[in-house]
Length: 80
Length: 146
Image (cartoon, rainbow over all chains, first blue to last red):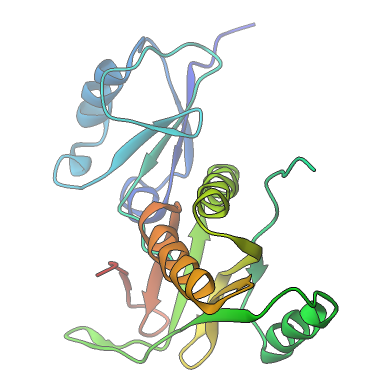
């Protein structure tokens, strides 16, 4: 079985900008690597504001990732 | 009793009958002396791009339900509440319709009103929910909370 990589979910404005709400990224072992990989894959993300969650928790520092991690790209919240 | 994350999302607008039913259900809890209710309504906003007709809400549901649960636990720990209910719309809600319903009940009014206000602020700041402001079939803007 081929490894699909880490599952990334995108929401709101981010999903619209990259035209995907779910995709996989290979060869990233932490959130810093993920960010630089995202920036080269989707240069349009560079000028956008978003936070990252790993397993449904917002992360502010570099966080290790593994095959089971669920990562999400969260633009500023605007509920209510 | 152990509390667990509850569903807070409702597809489409929150009806006034849902709100009325929710109030009615509390009549059996006679230790309650005060309810506080917040209702968020979709506003007709005029933007340079056009006039807002509706907001379409989406969420990261698993994270939002977990977060709502945590906030609820915090508020229960901080205020002497009898009940706390939250409902948030998903999907399209037209201007003039209700998209958020927060309902707190307590023995006395101070706890109910303060808890209700804090809950609304935390929902707006911390729940992964996004509103897309719809102008017409082709035009939309991403809502920003002020």
